[in-house]
Length: 112
Image (cartoon, rainbow, N blue to C red; front, side, top):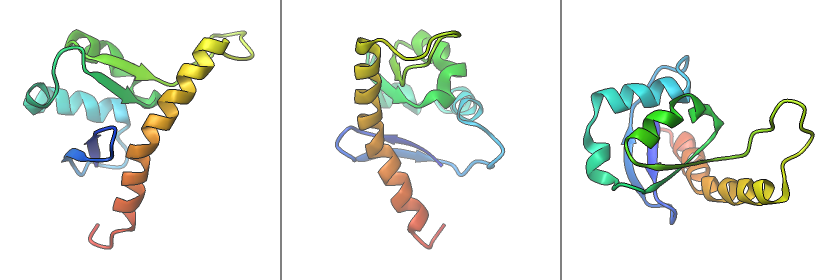
């Protein structure tokens, strides 16, 4: 399942199910191609907080006018993120926890 969860835990939309062999980027690409409701639910310059699985479709989100936030990635040869990058990455991880906790509750629900 792919979800659109607000920062306070309210689930705005739940799309799926999708086959387990598809990664986040492939699912997002399929959603953006098939569904146009995302443009109704989100406005330009809305911040989309995603995990690293979405890095392959980051450009498509930016073309749609969304501000995409993702945990920091180390460049080749780097041993750690800068202080600013590490703090931003921590903040993004804290915000993503809301969606992760929703998915944990959904998986425990016996219906699925």
